[in-house]
Length: 438
Image 1 (cartoon, rainbow, N blue to C red):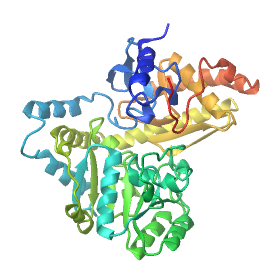
Image 2 (image 1 turned 135 degrees about the vertical axis):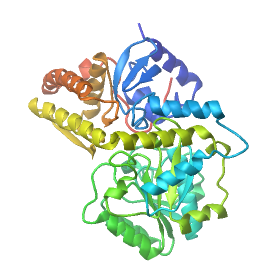
Image 3 (image 1 turned 30 degrees about the vertical axis):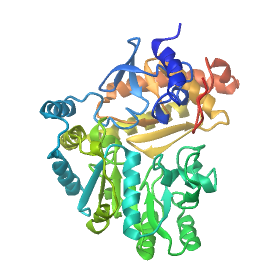
Image 4 (image 1 turned 45 degrees about the vertical axis):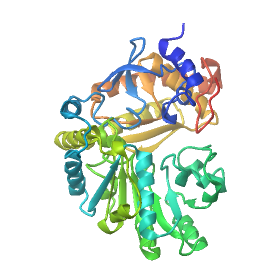
């Protein structure tokens, strides 16, 4: 008998285009037809589904947003207080100014701040401000930066342009075709690709936006060279830290890398699951927000500011980043050791507190699906990238590794006999962007 969450997901796909609001949470990206899909309760690093089954979350902790753990008492207390005092008013929330000051104290190179609610819209705001400053329309980018027209328009020129930036198969349907060639991709650590863009569009690149790090780190002074190009051509350099921010250090990861941008964007971990994102930058650039209309009612709502302040204060008090790095290394090294012991070919990467794991086989997706399927049986929600949380513990991680060892012992036999697919209870997990059918 199917559990309640599976039945509800089947209903959702009929009445909600795509089934839900976020591609990263689609059931088909984990375990088609078997994933519990919905939660009733989440606390720490544990999640209860609609049938009351409890799981440890090793599938991203809210897509990387809950850095302190689910339902953190200190953050929730600040939010409840904000609600009791009134979360919205004709007047402004004073916490907006406090959060601005806190972010600027963490990033001495920055002088001004704007806020929004999500990472994608924060990137769109940053690009708009940067274009207003440079007076130029074309953007060079590296990495994943959301769903907005300015970004997806890259696939108007070549439907594969975005494939190497995180999610393959993104469709630009509905994006105005006159935006073609306004967003131009280059790959991380390939400075020659950025140089070619600059050469092909002389005097037209006004913005360079990139993730300072996602998987591998910079090589051969890559970030310094990007900074130098931006200075040479008069482009605004934006670091998208929606994912990397607050995972290695208290602030942007760029602070550990010796290169400062003109603007930086934060989201995900900033509010520990509450909706808040931030754009910080140099005054001469940020002030251009006043020359373009960038305004929204719910960017002034109090809860996000209160949550972010409480989250940052707790991260600082608990030295959260140090602990998350330690947890990430325990997971990554432990799982790699188990794989090596059983002769299973794998690759690992990412930053310690947001690491990824892959199988080096032609049928890798099938192997991933089997791993997720069997770990779910053992009480673990699993994805191939793991965002660690302060809510983890060595005990929880050891349980995860013990369960992984049991699965890998069986997986070795299946790989050797080329019979992984025969053990799957439903279809293979999806990768990239696909249209869902009922």
